[in-house]
Image 1: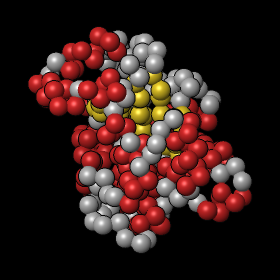
Image 2: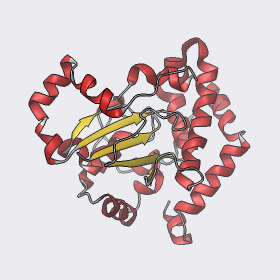
Image 3: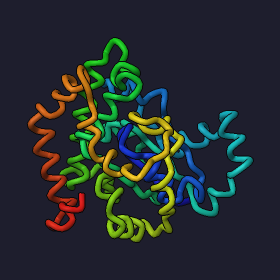
Image 4: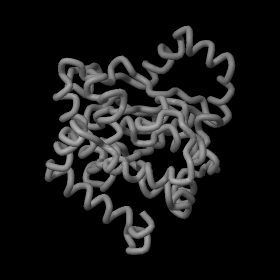
Length: 264
């Protein structure tokens, strides 16, 4: 069985990209798995590594999953399994080993726009999920973006053979999207770019409001839309020299030509 493992951070455009791949419809799709362990893992709490083929049958034995299997389980044989992992530290393996036929996809968004969305989301994602450990949650989120960036750049090899997607170029460059689709051997749904993904509550800034003609410009300038105390918290992101240097290296890699950089 083919497995597609989609790795990204919350507020990185996960759902619109997933919908674009077509895998949410053609494959048996499990969204944001291991939710109960996700926040503790980001906070640095210990968790037990699982064997995938030990975890998967037990996960499917749950009532909700049994209902999904009855309705759409045929997709497992037709296209395979697509799983989504959000905010998971990739240096702490979830499954050991991953199945042999597993294709890893790593989504990375510009940290300025991503953290702006996390800061704006429902009064602050760090407060929503971190609670009394909100400061640790925020700081560990910065560390996680850097971890994903190093994997994206090829400095680490924790998601062996992964296909990297840089959201901020993906959303504006059809040629870039075509390259990604070809590398994954997928027929994408370009119409997904014009729909607000309902999963995750839509945009941190606009909820489920229609995109509008300036939607792309807004998506790429979230950090300019912060206000008051939000800007003070955002300053912790821009003050992280290591993050900003990694950001520049990612931009150099993604926008290899001056023409591509100008489009972004």
